[in-house]
Amino acid sequence: MCGIVGYVGTQQAAPLLLEGLTRLEHRGYDSAGVAVLGGSGLRVAKRAGRVRELADGLPRRFGGKVGIGHTRWATHGPANDTNAHPHLDAASRVAVVHNGIIDNAAALRTELADDGIVLASDTDTEVLAHLIGRSRAETLEQRVAEALGRVEGTYGLAVAHADFPDRLVVARNGSPLIVGVGDREMHVASDLAALVRYTTTVAHLDDGEMATITATGFTTYRLGASGLAATERRAREVDIDPTAYDAGQHDSFMHKELLEQPTRAEAVLRGRLDERFGTGHLGGLNLDARELRAIRRVKILGCGSAYYVGQMGASLIEELARIPADAEAASEFRYRNPIIEPDTLYVAVSQSGETIDTLLAVQEVQRKGGRVIGLVNVVGSAIARQVDGGIYLHAGPEVAVASTKALTNMFLGFAMLALQLGRVRDLSIADGRRLIGGLTRIPEQIGDILATESDLAVVAQRLAAAESLFFVGRVRGFPVAREGAQKFKEISYRHAEAYQTSELKHGPLALISPDVPTVAIVPDDELVERNVAALHEIAARGGPLVVVTHASVDLGHLAGGVGADGVDGAATVRIDVPRNERELDPILLTIPLQLLACHAALELGHDIDKPRNLAKSVTVE
Ligand code: AGP
Figure 1 (tube, rainbow, N blue to C red):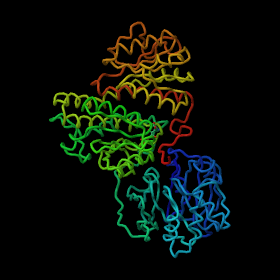
Figure 2 (cartoon, rainbow, N blue to C red):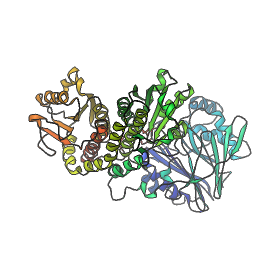
Figure 3 (cartoon, rainbow, N blue to C red):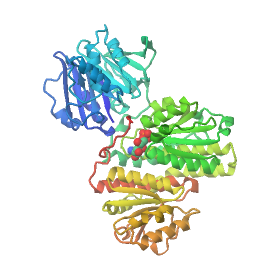
Figure 4 (cartoon, rainbow, N blue to C red):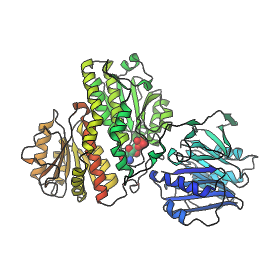
């Protein structure tokens, strides 16, 4: 979604701003722009399209050592040159870039229009530029604070003003902003990805905070009804590998991130498994054994893939801890006036830690007195800061829109949480150790699946030819099917629908034909016979099958191998994954589905890191 960059220092700002915007491209955007403050005042260039096009079209004289930049993902008004940020006030002395949504923009636009101001764009952001531009307060900080006092909604914003050419003023409320400290220069960005090339010394602003950025430092304030009160915020070193944001020799970030899964899985497990007592050791939960024991229900909240892995987590918790657990799409949760119970543990799960629906769901729970823990990947993100405890997922930066390694680590996080909840109840030490053994094997087993990539690519090429596919599974396998369909549709743009295998007969079987392949999740578990029977029903109707299963499963006369002549005939292709403990199988069954999606999208010639219409972090409702 939208991205912000800013620079104040001794170098020309424009090239640095453009480089920063390039680093934010993965978040998804439809237009881009920059503004610089130099000897000839404020200069702006913006347009619909890619950052590359903006850079190519930049006027030759575009000098200035202070500047702001933006990538826009359209919300108010279409993606065109006029609606692109930065937005200017009537006198063209103020430039504003903004992430988030101003809820009372319509009323403010009317008020400005009544005062004779002609608004150039359809955006909510432009009102901010006019409000700041017409303020007569003494300092830029006061002018921005005055304007923000008039708006309702969410924002991360950066302001440049020709009357205050030595500084930027930035502010945050619900949309992240990070200040990066360099050598006689300062950077600002909405995402660490745009900063790490220049500095790893950063300060995350809090909601309700504002900062002044000059070449030599930054000062922070709290925005309040009675004005600006100085806050004490120090920049800290973040432990991040600057090359994490380079795809290296890989042709996509998704592929790079897929292959990182064994090492990232080791990272999330490291130091969190207690072999001796057969339990998880998640210190960050801030819950002692008595508090864990008092939990009567678990409710997991996440969006998209995080929701599907939440369903896998709910199964794990029910199986290991025997506590009722379920997952719900965070985007729906707060709109049904949910009942918040004191003995329910709420778990927010998010890669970015920025997903607004999940953040608002967390706030809804907390407002009603509930306790929320987080499974979050991005350190210092909004959700990580909002929750009452939790763990980081240690997946490293995930750039591709399609989540892979973060999702795997979410599953492993849930497994450790389930173990810990189980071991303060009836899960035996022997079972605890059995599961720890299973968890310890997972990184290597993921590696074994990844090693079959070339075979899976052949299957994917054939699936790519189908306009429409089913992904089916039962109980533990159903969220796997949902995640498989999600990954496939988001990057291949094929219609991929997930169903419970048991529900096929109740409707979707009518769609089975030689043109509609089914990817079936068939682990060797207590449901294997029922699952295989359903495969026969599909095959009998000419439906091509790809079965993700275990080598021990007998598919009878349906059997084929990866690369066998299936998919486009009625024959079956089987993909065998290594066996683990039953409860942990879902994540291993998920890995081949990631590779199928990746290779189908490559076969179709799509830009798999930037799927159409999608953004990496969904920061608006
Ligand atoms: C995953 O492949 C998707 N891009 C998407 O569903 C994602 O999982 C969802 O938007 C939630 O994001 P989050 O984990 O950053 O909260």
